[in-house]
Image 1 (cartoon, one colour):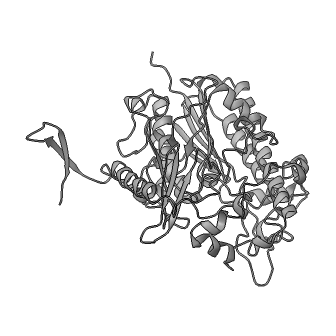
Image 2 (cartoon, rainbow, N blue to C red):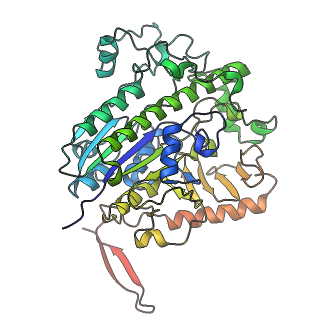
Image 3 (cartoon, helix red, strand yellow):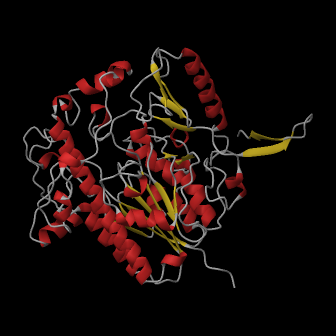
Length: 483
């Protein structure tokens, strides 16, 4: 009798840094649910996303392809309809598919591949109104739920002193009147309603700890601003970075414009509220893990946890996220637990967001599509046995980045400036060596070009190809039909 393939739950946070988890060394944060996941599976120490904003990074998580190839380069882009996403890969193999919570994938094909879709697109009031009227007249499902509990949910510019407080306005509402509590409830309802006849794939997308930072209930006051870890800053940091940083500080269109004038207490209150959001979503992860145990699903369910990108969180004097390629934006958690995953391991290999698709499919014993550009980190396929990466890659429209264990080089195309950091001695990227180390810049630029060549898209899902042998070497060659 053929063994039933494992279920898969992919859990994503939004704006979660690698270092703001207990299992990753934060001395203050309380994350028992995520820490439990790390202890029971693998916690990757060097996992990096390909883009510092939500939509491109999520498109990469779903396709296993680099942003410059799936063409979602920045927020506000649609994923082309020829791109195949993780739910479709699983659906083709007989899985029941679902997405609960935030997905941010603008593609009809993705939606059509889901058997169940719930709790998406719930957050509002991102744009400032000149009339100051943020009244909710057509409540969504979550807002109706909160009203049924006798409360009114407010977020974004509807919050008091939203800008002045850098988005940190802890909520006076009960714990269950929070976006992540609601999506957690809906994810558990979905799992409870499964009939068990088919394996399932669930993408469970948290909204937090993305700003606004509005932890509720006990999480609203869980952390003392005076006791959060110190920020990573220095007086010479921003002056030695490219001028785009100073421009970012001065822009009038920033949602927290004038943030460079915010006092240390305001930044600390922001960080404390962010920590509350992290602990609030961690509680929901703990509840989900308990439900899997209760339903006897844990032994045959792969649980993966990651984030679409990180957060400056006051480092370098910048709140929230920013369009730069520093590690605080690119270095995020990746945790795996389930059948085929060794317990208690902390792999140190360089890994990327493009690896999520082949890794999850590989753990399930499913064929990895050749259009996926990452590698199977589980080592269960031949793809997972390749030599370790020497470097990872990221991009942000006008910047490209190559990062090894020793160096980070950020290329600004057609510009005379850039960024270079020696990570072994400067892990928080406070000393830009671009002007001081031209020979290292030249070497890293060559390595970036080689990496771009190595990750070029020769196997686009729409390409029609033919193969043959090189007449002299016998090596296999692939070329492309035209019609």
